[in-house]
Length: 485
Image (cartoon, rainbow, N blue to C red):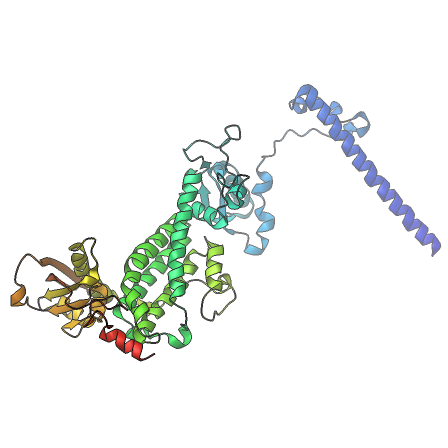
């Protein structure tokens, strides 16, 4: 037993001596080559015999000097052989700068095709280079190099190098046309910060107006929702489809453009301005208000998921502040956008956009004035357009109809003929609207007239519409809401 132990110890000692000797010889060889390069340059490999390339004690006669050149991209070019073993041997995407068209992209393709008869990637995304704000090449000597860490966390002087955060840097990357050279500097980053702040305001409005709303118990069926709310879901589905297609095409700049257009034009400038009266002035659990909240919940869910790949911190922050129960603890564990095919209703476009054409005519006639100080008379000859408007307002005159909500006036009257006491061209706005249904099978151009008149009643101190019988008392709608509390 003791003899076997001594034998194993001797073997370990001999092995350690061999390793130490090898390391020692390698160090001596490297130092020898360094001296040769210092004396003769890198051409020493070609000009000197093998006996001089290695130390005299290294048995140089046992070595042969190789004459082949190993491409510098060979190592990275064959990385697919190891890193893609669990991915079927092929990556979804290779991403690099355009200088790699003759480097990593090419060496990866050549080695993979030569050995396996197939490319190591399904798709290539080639990006350009980052330039200074004025288009100049970045250089340390010039001092215009932008450090991403400084962009995110700020520099030594916050007044000149403020901390923008990771999301703003990611937004800049996404909105840039990365397939060409891109510019970066304070002006570009400040613009990205302004865009995100506007988005945050939109998200704040959505979160605030969903307080007390539970989608599982308070949602209104789509068919029973206000037409303008159904129209928003219609637009939302189109938005979600376009965003998904843009991501699939790696066109992140298009994602940003679609997001900006949707949340500024369709939401902030259009939908929010129309539904504020219903959100703020109707009874909390009124189906009319719940209808709007149903649409807002779908909008918030879809919009947050749409920008989550680009602004992960903002998306997660919003997700954590949702005022209702979530199916997952993180937006990144809850799947992609989930829209419904029943939201797509082309006929809704004709009704809402027809009303919006007359709304634009009305608002255009009172630039800079308060729309609530006016009442509107809409005159449409019998036909499809009139029937669509009747869907929005069944009664002749209303201050609470869906049509009046879109018009944003204190009261809207819907007629087929101009009243005799209003027959004058001074206050009549004329226009036409082309209805195009069933893919063009149903086409009808209808004319309309919009008559703008001063509001006939007093201002309600609660809803601010001119629908009160007296300046001291609320309007009939507000009295009913207040009486129910």
